[in-house]
Image (cartoon, rainbow, N blue to C red; front, side, top):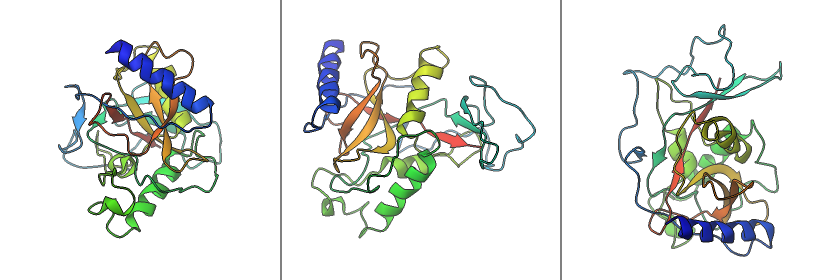
Amino acid sequence: MKQTFFIALCFLTLFSCSNDDEILKSTEEIEDETVSVDQETEETDDTTNDSDDSDSVVFVVGEEGPAGGFIIYVNQDPDSSWQYIEAAPIDIEGDIEWGCVSSQLFDDQSTTSIGTGLLNTTTIVDFHDALEDYYNNPDQCDSSNNGTVAAKVALEFEYGGFSDWHLPSRDEGLLFYDILFDTGLSDFETEGLYWTSTEHPNAMDAAAAISFDEDSGDQHWGWVGKNWNTSEVLPIYIRAVRYF
């Protein structure tokens, strides 16, 4: 399996460094530790509490956050509406695609940076909500679409008493590797990929995903097809984040 993923990742690296003319597809059987998109997501209590009482608490990177996740970023901008990014401690898994294969949502706007994940997520969801019942009629985009949208799944995620989660941008997803995976703070599936909210700027059918395969070298991400799902070789997951 390791050899299969390494070969897949080589293709992924070639794809991201060339003319982006090859979109990777793959997935595998889901691991027991992940949370099914069809199941109820875990909560620490019976209510959600998006307005936490953490304004007076100072957090540092790597600490546990108010929702029971991990602080992966401290915002130094005093004018920002949020100060911290908290990553959920668990995965969401399922046959989850990024969204409409034939869509280009962001008109060359940068969707990679830290702090863009929430806007990216809401933009993606608003686009699909405005289609003619995309979730039950995904063929209007492409026959390979199954009606799932990773951003919508992340936006509807509830955990730790909070429901303000969203899909990370590419650079926020890379913090998972540096802050959580590389230090051993949190486990990630190494034989699979994780969606981000970052769309390819020039290829309407691709989006960025994060890799945790330790043989991947220095590049821990690549462009994959928006219709990548878990019916093939390697699974694809979601690890949601929240700003507060």
